[in-house]
Each structure stands twice: as structure tokens, then as C-alpha cells.
Length: 111
Length: 115
Image (tube, rainbow over all chains, first blue to last red; front, side):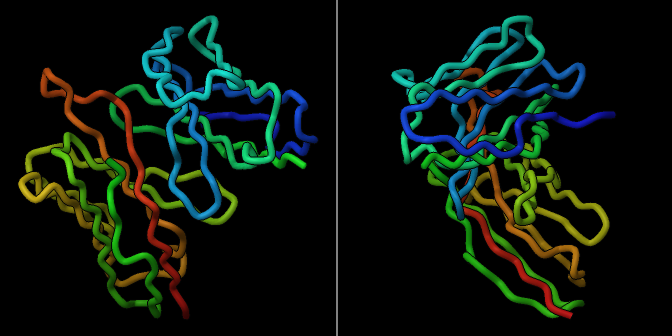
């Protein structure tokens, strides 16, 4: 069974530029999560999807962050414009029941 | 609401045992344990649901004390491959007594195993 796929693995951009991350969850997993992980910290939830519906986006900074999961499968997280403080690893996870499985993440560096 | 993990770091020699604790100030529905190696994704270890159960596989086990709102991860006869950062993720019950599906992660415990 293939795991959670994320791309790109690394991204370096200048501040004020837009950036997008893509995630393809494990087949059959209806729930998809986007997390942010700062160095030395645990993952922090940004948004959770049940199929195509965002059921928890309370921690998503909506002035610059957006996400979509149009067909209830893969998902895109976008930042526009990026700020220096957005440098972090963006993790995608998926689940069918209680167990969440993480992808390798995208390491974003904003210069 | 973030759970508190202790210790922050532990250094072991191969074959030694370790215990990592995870405490919450709120009532818990579930506790999830993950191990993350540097530059890699967190890897799922096990989940414990409310009920005070204990789980384990190989030489890693965990307990969940619902009354004390805490969980402990036990690593027995540690191996070099156990090195990494261990995170607990806590799930809280909704009004219906089941899970919101959202996890809040602790700060992590760095485990280093030396030969």
C-alpha cells in the first residue's frame, strides 16, 4: 500500500511570493490533515478535511493561507504571500479511522 | 491544551529501558504515539483509547490512565533504531463522547541510544 505522497519535498522562495504544496493521501482514507511543524516542535493542525469538506480550519491563517480538496482525494495548500515566519515543514496526513499516517512533508524556506 | 511530555530528552545505551510520559490538563479520548527521525515523517507507533488499556508490540508498549489524564510509553531493551523524537498526540472527546478527530501534539521527547 502506497503511503501519503507530498510534493515538492523542498521549496525555497523569497518573501511575498506565492507557494503551493500538494498532497495525495492513502487510497480509501477519507480524512486528510494539513499540519505545520516548526523546528523542535510537534505538528500543529492547520486544517482537517472529511472528504471534500473542511470540518476544522480554525487554526488556518485565512488572510494568507488557503486549501482545497475538490474531489475529496488529493489536496493543495497555498500561501500567498509568504512571510519569513512561514518557514517550516508542512506535513500532510490521512486517516480512515483513528490512526493518522503522515507524508514526508515539504520543507519551506522563505528568504 | 497542548499535552506536556517528560522528559524533554533522554540518553541511553543499547539494552537499557526508558519511559516517556504525556500529561494532559483536559479529559482525553485517545492518545497516539509517534516516532520521528530527523528529516523524516512521524511514524505511527500505537493508539490508546480511553479505558485504561495497555498496548504493545515488540519491545515498545504504552499505558493510558484515563483518570490521571496521562499516558506512558515504555521502551524495553532499547535498540539503536529507537533513536528519534517521540511525540504524543492527544484526542479530546466531543459532546457525544467520541472523538473530534483532531490531535494536539506535545513538544516531543528526544531519545538517543548509543552503542
